[in-house]
Length: 59
Image (cartoon, rainbow, N blue to C red; front, side, top):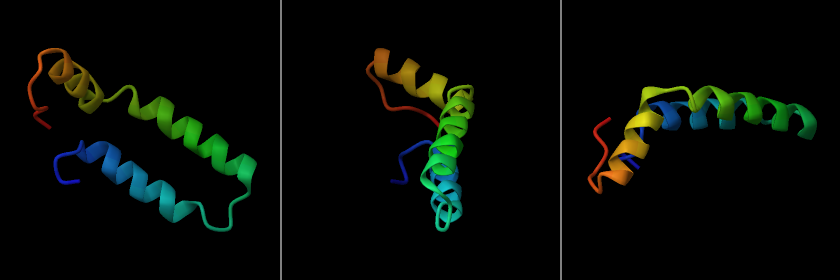
């Protein structure tokens, strides 16, 4: 897991901590917002770039 993007790991931990007690609809809404936000990060761009360049990402 340490090789994964730090932004996505942090966001996943925050989501998992906030979901208990939350309704299904609110959980899906929160997950959709998080997904949209993380797609705007440099980590995502680096991951895609590294994939196409066939090299490990540098986060």
